[in-house]
Amino acid sequence: PAPVSARYRRPLQWIFLLLLLFSLVTLWYLTLSSKADLQNLNLLYFYEYEPVYGQRRPFTLRERRGCADADPFLVILVASRPGDVKARQAIRITWASRESWWGQRILTLFLLGQDARGEAAAAAALSVEDESVLYGDIIRQDFVDTYDNLTLKTIMAFQWLSQFCSNARFFMKTDVDVFINTPNLVKLLLQLNSSENVFTGYPLIENFAYRGLDRTRFISYEEYPFKFYPPYCSGLGYILDGKLALRAYELMSHVKPLKFEDVYVGICLNILKVNITIPEGAERFF
Image (tube, rainbow, N blue to C red; front, side, top):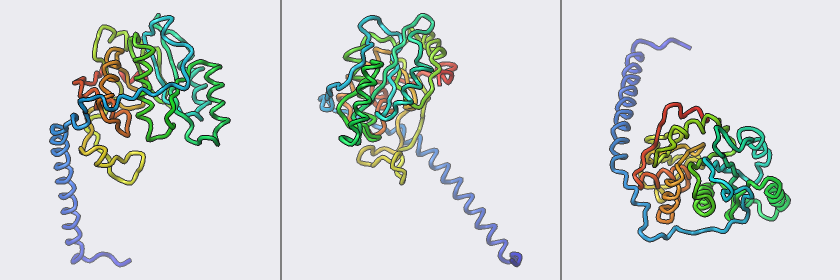
C-alpha cells in the first residue's frame, strides 16, 4: 500500500493523543468514583429487622463422622456437585487423607444439593447415597444443585455447623477443585488460636458488580444496586473462627441471599463490622 502522506499523518497523531488523554481521564475518574462508591455503600439495604430469610431446610443426607465424639479444631466443608465423584475421591486420598495435623483434629465433609437432572439422574443419585454409606462424609439438602444455588449450599454449611458442630474452633469453606495445604493451614490457625473474629482467605477489595454479557459473573441492579462489592474473601477458600461462624449464620436469617455466595458472606461479616484478617504467609494453604 502507498505510504501515508504527511498531510494525513499529523491528524492521525492528534487522534491518537486525544484517545490516550481520554483513556487516562477515564481511568482517573473510575479510580476516584470507586472510592466514593465504597464509602457510600449501604449494606443495611440487604438487612431485614425480622428474620424473614431464616429457613431451616431438612438434611436429606448427613455425615456419619460428626463432632459428637471429639471437638474438631478445624472443619473443612467442600462445595461439590453430585457428579463430582472422582474429585471427592481424589480429595479423600490426598489433602484430606489424615484426620489430624500437629495434634489437632480435622474433619472434612462434602456439601451437595439434589441432582439438577432429576429423575433422569436416578442412578447418579443412588451413587451419591451409596457414596454416603461408604464414606459417611456427605451433607445434602433438598435444593437443586445449580450454579445459582451456590449461596443456598453455603447457608447449608453454616446451618450444619450451627446445629451439629457448634464446638468447632475454626470453619473453612472451599471448593472441590481446590487443593488445600492442610498442615500449613493448621500451623497458620494455631498462630491465630487465641484470636476472635477471624475471617481470612484470599481478600478481594473494590471488586465491581459486573453488568456485562457473561452470565456467570452478571448480577442485576435489582439484586445488587451498588457499583462495588464490600471487601470479601474468594469462595475458593475462606476461614472463620467457630464463634464468628455462628454469629454469621444467625445474621443470615436477616440478610437477603445474593447470587454470589462469597460476596454474600462478605456482606454479612461487613454488617457485623468484621475486617478481613491477613496473616503473614496466608497464601501457603492454597
